[in-house]
Image 1: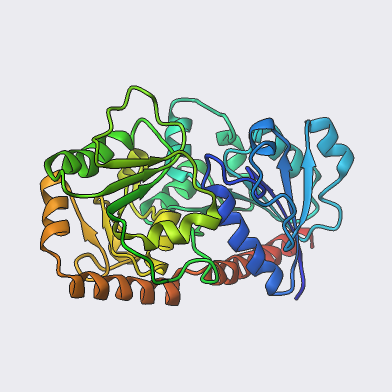
Image 2: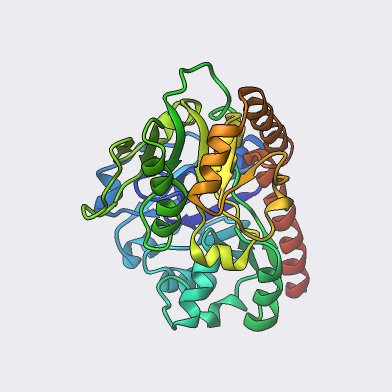
Length: 360
């Protein structure tokens, strides 16, 4: 059945400095392909307005607003069958309250940053979600699975916490013949908690392997960082260039934020993108990884520069290529945006049944 789905998210128009945009783009495109009417509601802020790489998405109606007052005037919830409020939305608590008060349909909270969110709540940092709201949302859709879902229901009163992991678009991410310019690459915005593992797993390895070629792509890295001479830098890489970036690497590095390692079951979108390109992944270790890729068969784990170098130097080209292809097969059968859209559709229908029952 065709539904009108209204999503209040951080950004779909700009991928600058955030991983939300690519997730929303794939998910909403697939919802539209399944026949649904999709609306994306985004706060019009200067840093995204100046860096829009998808200013006019064809797969959804775009609503830009500059204030809560303007949001109310635009009435984006009119006719909605299912509404979603995402994490890191500016003034997210106020936006969430407004949606919960005005929606005449089930409302879900979509947390692309679940472990970070819960850590913020423990510090009483209510930047975009307040604990009192969790029980009011009909569903808590989480990038993190495992025990975190039970915690959301048990400790915060969520009536239904369900995993909605990140994904990739197979039309955008696939193997292509390119010269391998780098032995190991990494893509990610700077964060304080990701920098130590980047230092340990890549930069130290680069210092010990001067003939190796390394690359780091991502914005907001402080000038104080001392980059080894064999580590290249790209300040910002738009999604249109991600596939080429992956395909120029022999291996790619995945680094997980500290709160997500603690929670486990928190795959990153970069993990699936790289796998889709058939590029073998070296990842830091976290619980639940085997739910997504089999360690040692579809993905490699490193805990030190020594282990990183052992993989780079002692993995044959045949082993490297085969591992990449196995990861790609796993990604194509379980982790595409179409898989996630189908999952979300089933969640929404279940939520609509419960919502209708309460109105009787």
